[in-house]
Image 1 (cartoon, one colour):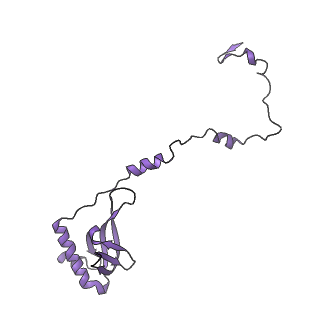
Image 2 (tube, one colour):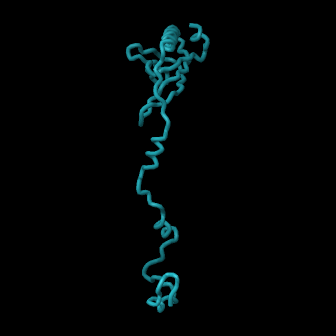
Amino acid sequence: MKNYFGDTSRYEEIMDLPHHVSTKHPPMPVRDRAAQFAPFAALTGYGEAVRETARYTEKKKAPDEERLEKLDRAVRFLREKIKERPFVVLTCFQADERKDGGSYVEVRGRLKKIDEYRRRLVLTDGAEISFDNILEIRCEENPGDLEDR
């Protein structure tokens, strides 16, 4: 006898026998049987590496003379108002931990002190922002004060 699998004459005697079920071993659950055929991730971590490479980061902008002068005026104004603990909004660069570049974030809080030695603004919540990473300073309570200077 021939079928589409080829010559089956060797197996004719067992073709119509019932399926064997072991009496020693319980049948494997269907879910576990299916797991045998699950996809195999040969390149573990590859997908994460591709996503990380595709993640966008910005380059840090170098401030021009006009922006540096504006920041200097803002720091002088804040130095005068430090006892009032003014509420400031800082746009600053935050470096990425995994790759070159980073992103610009807005940090809000009350100014605690200006650390001239370490060139940082210290907020009441403990955040310390380096002068070198600040792109813009706004005073929330008196927004015009920084603009007028």
